[in-house]
Amino acid sequence: MSSNLQQSPYLREQRNFPNDNLNELAGQVDQSYIDIAQKVNARTIGLFGSLFQIITGERWYLEGSSQGQQTLRQVYAFGAIAPGAEVDLPTGITNLVQFTRIYGTCITAVPDYRPLPYIDNITLNVGITLLVGIVGGKQQIRIVNGAGAPAITSGIVVLEWLSLF
Image (cartoon, rainbow, N blue to C red):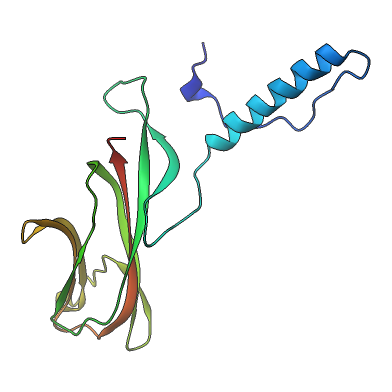
């Protein structure tokens, strides 16, 4: 038994279109378009926007539901953060069910490139914390640079979430 959840978004590489019957050809062309659209839409969309939310193309089936939920993605850029300081960025998200991914990167004054969050298991005060929550009554991204860490010159945070749309 095979369900839609068990099928891969593989698109067959060849199709024989009839060349002697216009009605059969029309049916095959229609079906090929449907097949292409379904397979393309089943793949993750590689677009990242910083001023607007983008549909990721992912479909999540939670709690045994046969009804999939789509996720949205948005990128948030930020500037310098001194050692021991923090920055709060408003998310602007109003249709949140649950986050599926919270991640990012930053450039330090060393210079080097660090993932967010960043943990140094030897020297804990050089870590960089990445949190999303309510700050001052608004949902915010909070980035905290460790007191012993180098200054951050810039970075990005990417949020992906299940949406109520």
